[in-house]
Length: 411
Length: 150
Figure 1 (cartoon, each protein chain N blue to C red):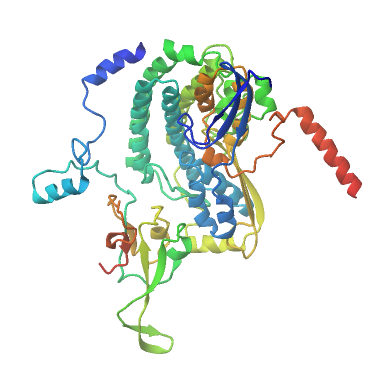
Figure 2: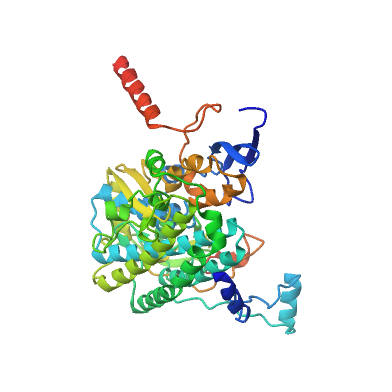
């Protein structure tokens, strides 16, 4: 660092960032030469509550509040982990309903993101337009689950509400609406000169960096990594529906890995979700929706259960993992660990921002669809402040060798 | 450019938002509500809620047996036991006796509207209404405490 370099702190509270995270940028003129990301500004102790205060059924609603937007993936992931620990089978119909609700949420989340991204580049008309389009899906969610945001539909061993004829018609109506309006969103976002100018070749994340930094979700797919839990390890009803990870070369024929590619991936995923929901509604079998209807019995099963389980779900932002350990006689979890997708997607900010301009910081940060409230239940590795915040493969390998030697010495 | 034609179309459309509670935001809400009560102004009705909407909880005290299952599953600990003021004739192992049965009290200001209690209730004495205008300055206001007495 020389004396022409300035350090600009952005955040923890900053108008460009919706949620608290701190960025420390070293700039020379307008060019960014150094980036540091400081997380953990909104730790709320959710895992602690799950391990000490609540029982498993209460934890479903607590995990719903990990993130306001991903409030199906987190409980979905948690009940999958609990079912894994219990060895409980989920009825086929419940799997289909879970899939439909998760996809409804993905449409809502991606449209919300599209609005925020437009807002970040100062295109507020598009912001309001895409949020007006999003209202349709919010109304559908309200009709299907009983509330606009917190759906409260997941339960250990199934779902709590069935999709009957009225609800099915309402979903079909909404899907028609989106198929009709999709070309409009596509036209506005992908063929607009302003958006293309601001997003093409901005915040490039190469495939190598995406793999090295373990990027997940649309961010990784936009860089050409064909990674999607729905495709790689199908859960719910995805195995029966034809599900393929979307990469931007399906639309433009090339992979750049910039913000524009991320817009393409997210918009195509909206269309894909619409098709998945239509397919799921057609193939939905009849039958029970809960494997254990009696909640009192379920509570006693959960109290007696022992074991550990892992749930993996593709959230709108990427792969979400919940680890749960149950102990006999303890109503709350013995251990509960949440790894939210934003944890992986924060490290790629550094290669994306380096060499860019300060004006690009909001859109590049927003292009990963960060969710700080999700992120902040993990402890961030605290490194020396003067050191560059980048974990290379060699560094990890070296650390691993060191640890092996240390363990061998102790033995 | 693609947006420009859309914007022109939107200029001639009716607003997407429902103008609740009045067409223009009132400067003073209390003043506005007083005028509504006097009949000088009208409230623009809110968007109707869908069926199965989860609004303010309703409690039928007479059906309740005080088993406490709702207290066990409530994620926000919004429900607590309460001793009934009125003594009732109870039939128990020892025969007939006069006692005050256990009932519950629900603090709506803590409720997260998950409706788990209504599903676990063996007597189905809890239900979700479609009432959702619950904003209040006082958390312990009379409207926000459901104990089946009011």
